Amino acid sequence: MISFWNIYFDTNFFLATRFVLAFDPFLQLKCNLSIANAGTISLILAAVIACAFFGVNFNATLVEKCAYQFSPWIVFIIFFWGVVQNNWIPQNATRNNIIAAIELIASIVSVILALALFSIRYRASKIDPIV
Image (cartoon, rainbow, N blue to C red; front, side, top):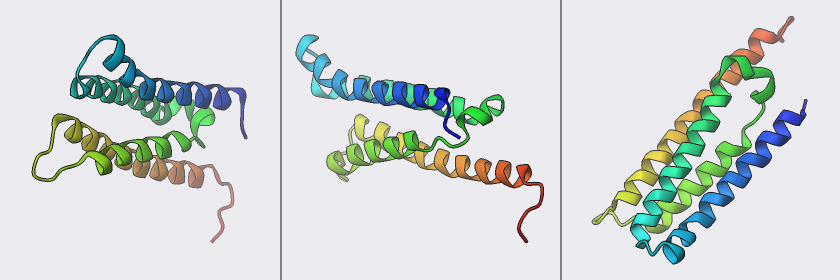
C-alpha cells in the first residue's frame, strides 16, 4: 500500500538526487573548482544521500513505511554505473572513478540485502504460506 510517507520520501529522494546532479556544474561555474574536485564533492554528497536512504530502509522500525521502496536503488545503480562506464580508464583510474566504483558496488550489495530482507519479512508475515 502506498502511503503519504512513501510519496513524500520518494519525492524528496529524487529532488536530492537532482540536486547532486546540478550541484557539480554549480561548483565548477560559481565556486571556480576544478572538474575533479567538484566531481569528488558531488560523489561524496551522493554517497551521503544514499547512506541516508539505505539506513532508513534497513531500519526495522520503518518496515511498514519503507518495505516496498526499491526505486532509489535503481536510480543509484544507474547513476553510479553511468559515472563508471563513461569515465573509467583502466590504465589511469582517478579518485572519482574509484569513489564511483565503490558506491556502485555498495548500491548493488544494498539491493541484494534489501531483497533478502524483503523476502524474509514477507515469508514471516504470511499466515499460510504456499507450499
